[in-house]
Length: 320
Ligand SMILES: C[S@@+](CC[C@H](N)C(=O)[O-])C[C@H]1O[C@@H](n2cnc3c(N)ncnc32)[C@H](O)[C@@H]1O
Image (tube, rainbow, N blue to C red; front, side, top):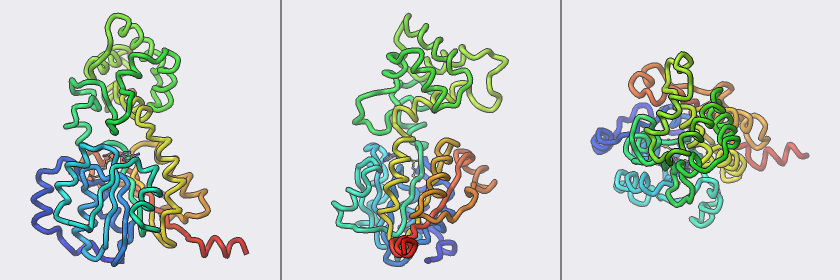
């Protein structure tokens, strides 16, 4: 394993970092977890603005290549300029990560040394995409990470029945007021179509009795999370990835997953514990240091789990 701790980022990296809006979460833990090795090929399945990929490439010049995927073309474009200096050491592919195996095949790569998934949306989505991910902004209610998808959050909010909306908000937002919120949305949309994130946030806030408004988060937080997760099929994608990624790893290869809410973490925990191809290396998830949370509040709910692919040899000996 290559040591990453003692090498400081080159000046160019520092310069880019000043502009970058998204600070990569649990960076040193991820670099350790991937156990970077000389000549290794790694996959960043959720490139985003390229923070983790950039760190892998700049801090570990011995790493041969990072193949990075994202299905948000706008984020990829930004990451592309940021990573241009790394030349052929980085390959960016527009794809849903559930297709990783095919992406590797078409890039003539059989197996990789490690795969990173840093789930969810980035600060770019919240602050700069203009797609209504944030309840505190007045933006069109879109919420698609992959802009080629046909359905937007506005479609869900304005077309789903009260029952299905209730179920969606309850399931993916773990919101106890789901029924009231769905009913209020239904009443409101009879009068006029709900098209903006701020309008939706107001309807949600109005539907929860004021004395039950959560203290630490905006009353619309859980519903916004639910819409985003459902629309982008986030949990289904994660399940598919957890199932198919181990077969993309070389024996001993690592899988690192950063999740941001309990539904995601539960899926990762169960997969790492029950998939016989994997050996979990983190009994409990790693969490960010207080120092990191103070400097990057977005990191506060992050959980990192790491597993190692046992490889065919182990599986064979188990069969004998
Ligand atoms: C939290 S951000 C990653 C941030 C990145 N690690 C960094 O440091 O800049 C997650 C990214 O994953 C992408 N993403 C989410 N689900 C995806 C999927 N199923 N396939 C491909 N990309 C996905 C999102 O578009 C987003 O850009």
